Length: 354
Image (tube, rainbow, N blue to C red):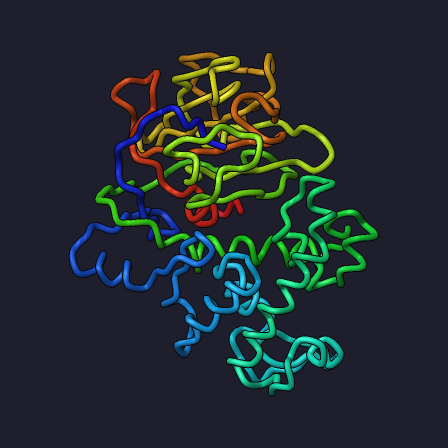
């Protein structure tokens, strides 16, 4: 969760380049077309133009029934069938949402499983039922209900309940991670309003900032998590969150950079490190680390993979995690990085980190 007391009167940005160069949309006709492609469903932006065959409004309607982001439903349909309504699996799953016959009998409302409109509507009903069924697990463990519902869709809700979370099956964990990543990078990431900034070519070696962790929250609009401070900026998440299951991981420099901030318990940021990439294209913040765990100081020039500190829960947070934030360029005042932010996910994917 990002500090909410820092006032940023700057536009939200659209990251378009995934490899090498990251470009931000610059207004004009392109920006108008971009805005027209995006709708708000359950308070979260959804890029309908990425859904084939004009099925975007069907997904939006189903998401309203399910009570989850439309971008997640779209990514789930892509993962299940590749948007092919005629596909079947060796075990009998069929249609866009790959319903098994027994599940279709309960949620298909007598429709045709190969009919896209019927299948997408049933997907919304079933995901909504899973959210309701698995909500006690989410409340008792603090886990993301959307991820639990996806796990229930893949492995069955009973497996989630018996595991008290996402089952320890490689297939299910990969399924959840893939859908959550695609939801943000393809079906939701491009929706914030246009900016006018070019990041440029990003050079050097890149690595994962928290090895062994899971992505827990992405860049973009979202309600402020329970237990955190509110405010004008609280409903937009300005970075990417990672959390290591079962223990606190070691936070690493994601690329070569010069340290410009290294502070213990810096207000709502918590224990933090900020560095400017050696090519000067980005300032990167690593927030909410464990107090007393910093391993670098201001002025250090560190290589990708250098330990910076330990994952923690300091500052304005609801639990232990690393908040990774990307700012464009180098700040005029190195003690306060307030340049426009950009979504870290497409950059990390383009560099092969995720």
